[in-house]
Length: 282
Image 1 (tube, rainbow, N blue to C red):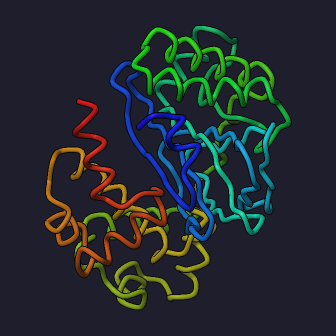
Image 2 (image 1 turned 30 degrees about the vertical axis):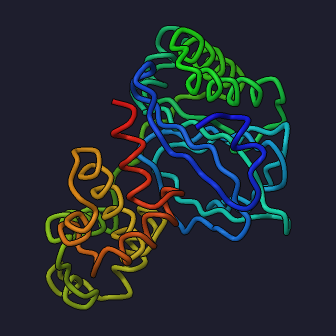
């Protein structure tokens, strides 16, 4: 999809895709007005640059307002949601580099060791925002050398200024152990999960205790986390070429419209559009 054509379009549009020239990277370019992202988390990083308008990003520590000239940096597994901060919505380019890709850049370029992360969520940095948008343009033009180079320059710049190694985790509490066990049960029984009361009984705890422990560990209650996990599983099946209707049943959504609704509110595009872009990029 050509950049100029997207820029001139009215209303909402979105493209979520992979560029084979840069393995380990997903890209999203979109304009949203009424669309909102429900609470979710990513396995890799999020690096976003708004072109116009304002995006409100809701994070555990509060809401940040992303506008042109800022770069939003969200670490893996950090729960967040997003919506328009002004009536006209927002347009932006977002990069989703994998943990492995960012770690490799950090190992080559910095002295950071261990699990790499960013210490800030939003920064004023027009130069890096331009690099984020330039990665998209290069990928859309099929210029692998430029896309890979610009991505590495942008990530290295952000790591130099805002990168950090996560501290060693403190000892695991009993609540965290219970939450981890609940997570494994939900993953194993994703198509037909137990109720909260049933899950708590299986784990030898009480429903409200389980709710508190799970949210403390993963930033979301179990039902929200499960929806996010189902969408992640759906993405893997769609990547493998499974039809959306079959995907819905396999991951536990009631039907394809149910999958479509939740998928779009987490990924930013419907599953059919997501799968077509994946197939086109191969």
